[in-house]
Image (cartoon, rainbow, N blue to C red; front, side):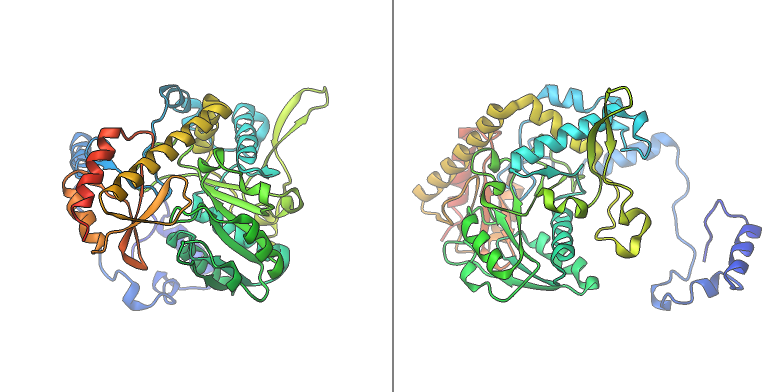
Length: 440
């Protein structure tokens, strides 16, 4: 076993003696032998900086990038949108790139003001009372919404629609297990809408997606009624861009609304980082995870910004905490705020309409070519049933430069498609004709 480089042998001996251990082997004793390395790391010889950069570029060139190598018809929380040049230029200012919400807010008023604006914009977009300063991604935000519901209701049963994206459901189940949560899933009907009539008993939260992972626009009035019958909080996993076009979840009485914020101007990348949006009602402000920026005035009446409703349990009384999140995605939150401000209310509506039109045109062309489209009404994603193995079809099209949607784990012949404003009519027509050739 090795040791951490900055620690000298004398320092290691002192620390081990302080906890009553004779050596590092005794320290690592609780770790099963099969999980220990048991040998020295076989690392390559040191290289010059130029050689390392060349190797990184070589590895990076193996990636197939959107637009450069692929025409993207996949969404699922990672959409190929046009990002305005002004948004890129402003968001990549060095003051923002190096930003981190400080514990001494008086030294960073600009960053805190930007985050305050972000919170305001997100709360308005989703129709809720307040938003926090962001979380890691949509899945993490969903887990935190469940944590809030459990803390608010003192119940440990959670009902999750299968219309929620599989990775979100997996995150809730995985991170809920150590807390003793009972996660119950409720299915969807032939129209791909959640079967709210199947929801029974009591629960802390009813988690639904709007639109759901199949693109289907759920009935949130029915979801609200079902949550009330359960005595549960209604947690909605929303598409923020869709909320610029349809009534936001807050209008239907949602208690917590979370979302993946990538559509708010953040370019596609290889696995992130992305942006978790978290909004709720004022009644639950003391249970909000992460950071919350507020506006105030100083002793001379000057406006200022602070991290508020702290000190919090997750900082100092961790045994009582409802969350262990103490940070946020500052850069990407500011990026989203710049994009929302730049586009404005009408600009977001226009963008959402362009996505709606592109996706519906793609669905129309596919139906004209004999491809079965499922799950209406939809906003900008929809399911097609290819009648053959969708994974194999997607691999074949990938080799030809098409990224043909998101697979549905439970349905091997289904794929979820979208077309954003970045797709031209010519691209949509060509893709529809190529995909139709795979259908039986």
